[in-house]
Image (cartoon, rainbow, N blue to C red; front, side, top):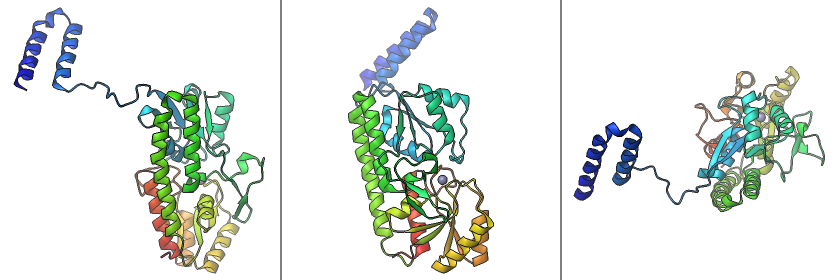
Length: 328
Ligand SMILES: [Zn+2]
């Protein structure tokens, strides 16, 4: 250690002596001195050196999956800003340009019109449809949902596939497989990261299955129709106040219908969300003397969210559903 310090001192003296020879030479000596002290930012040999891919996700849940899969091997960004409602996303010219030069765009066709159009008009190197292989649902006029028929117009499909942990596993594998096909040098990195991600999602799915297996009631009232895939996966029934798009105001007739159903099923809680005004939910709850609570459709993470990532907020959603529905 003493020898090393002596060496560094010698180097520093050399730096001072060489100041007049120019900054460039001085900088090189500084780098040498830092390397000797172990302060170097030199690359760790275990990190991938090809970690340069850029991937753009269209909304938070897709960003969550892609970030976990890509890890240190690249950069993942989200087109939807934190706190922004993703359904009515508008894209800037810069975002559209970034999409066309990225290595991949991860999206759900039919969810965000602006994203679908940008992919059509200025195609990225690769667009990953995460809904591929998932059994899709369509909303009926009464707020219930039924299986989509093959070839159904994508804009009529319920996009909220990320609220089913089971479907998230399918989505993770789709992203991993497609990124690996285009970037074979990184395939082993993606596969290792995906294994860990799928393990987390499998645990979450098991917690939901066990936690919702024995409840006093299966019906739950939500702010907008975001939870049909979750309901289907765990034997629950969603009663949505608003439709698939939270920006569309519910009609007076729909509010009256929800109140009637809430009474009929003995619902205890009217759920609202973090990114949309709770006014309608609070009004319905007030009229019926019910509780309100957050059931988060995880369309974005903000300081209001009950967790810092998808897994944490889903755990909070599970607790909220168990309390509202009297699950043991
Ligand atoms: Zn939504």
